[in-house]
Image (cartoon, rainbow, N blue to C red; front, side):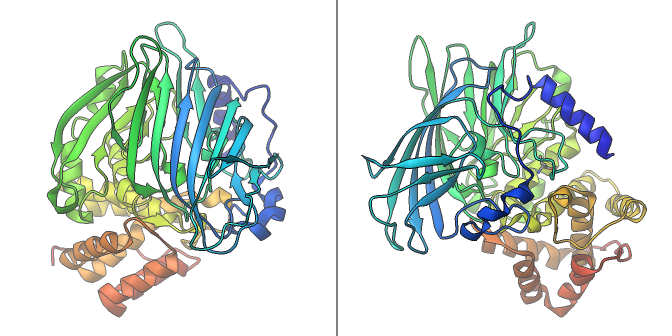
Amino acid sequence: VRSVKRLTLLLSAVLLGGPPAAAQPLPPTSALAAEAARTLNDPIFPGLGQLGLDVRHYDVALTVAEPGTPGLSGSVTLTLTATRPLAEVRLDFFGPTVTAVRWNGQAVPFRVDGAAQKLIVMPPTPLLPGQEARLSAEYQGTPGVILDPDLDLPVPLGWQSVPGEGPRAGANFTLSEPNGTHTFLPSNDHPSDKATFTTRVTVPQGYAAAASGLEGPVVGGNGPQTFVFTQAQPIPTYALAVHVNRFERVTAPSVPVGVNGSPVVRRDYFPVGTPQGVRTVYARTDEMLRVLSEWFGPYPFGAYGVAVVTPRLPALETATLSTMPPTASERTAVHELAHQWFGNAVTPAGWADVWLSEGFATYAELLWTESQGGDGQAVAARWHDTLARGGTRPLVAVQAGQLFDRSAYQRGALALHALRAATGDVAFRAFLHAYTARFSGSTLTTADFLTFARARTGPAGEAALRPWAESPGLPPLPPSSSSR
Ligand code: LEU
């Protein structure tokens, strides 16, 4: 499987135009460990983030002058606070050349450490806990390419460029999970530091931009136009969507499944010429929103839809606007929608806990199957079979190659199936509602999850989860939960 993935990786690099000439090959994530003393010390990605830094908001402006080519110019203003005194701010950045940095409007010294993938900024005085500062950075050129050999993913991460070909227009988009956002945006690029975003994207006439959040009025007339989006609820950095393409924006009536029944704006973006068969996969998004919000609680954001891309990459649950390859199935559509609750609203505190995203999103596939009259227990049995044949591990990942493996997905889902079998459907549903109400907008670890499960479902619920969380072997298939 590995060599097939390696080949796909090479192929997709070629299809995407390959790494830009200026990009340096990356050291493995393990080589960035020296940085760890000052970072968040994520056991999987020790180089990411800065200890004590809390980014509240990113106000991002990107200009894409030639869609389909990698170049961009950007400017971002971060609203910062700190939980410990910071004499310097060390943002993750593996992006274009930085031309200016300002601190509360005043030019300040900075340097770029390419090996550590950091933009290091020296404020006039240390940032102290309780203070707020605005850090602005301007940059221009070619984003870096993260092709991490430790990470078993068939795609270079971060800012993607797809050259035009025949009738197909050139396009750009983000595909950043887990650590690609800092190829195009100086950021505290770790899921434990969620933030809100304003994203302004300027594109040539005839193109459209799409990004996470609610769309504001388009600015500009003849010539370049600026599309503006507001993501008002905090999200992890990897979940920021930015898309540039010749798009058809297809709207549908909003669906009243938000907090207190508030309307969820519905819009999908299809590249001009997207075949009907690709669009059909999203024909039942409204019903998916209803089914999943009954299980999980109110939909956590103000909008939902998909942006379809042309390369055959993995799908990604970018916030409010999932990024979908043309090959995605209805099952994938449900999976990415479920990630809006689990991943984007309720976020794992570190990469080791990524099953809290993938296990829940995978379980949503079973819930959808049942809602359509299908046999959920048969789905669970297939997952169990896959794990029995292919091997498995405890839920907390210990290396990068495990982040998106079948244990994160199927074993994580079976842990929830076990909790449901132990508690019955009514209590399981109540648990899920309480869980999203408690952790929406914040982050948690696997230990926090087990503590919360015990508090809500008692020792029986926790006892059902423990072997899935901790046993090196494969626990038995949980029985079907009759509607108790
Ligand atoms: N989170 C994605 C998913 O929905 C996977 C990622 C590696 C692109 O499965």
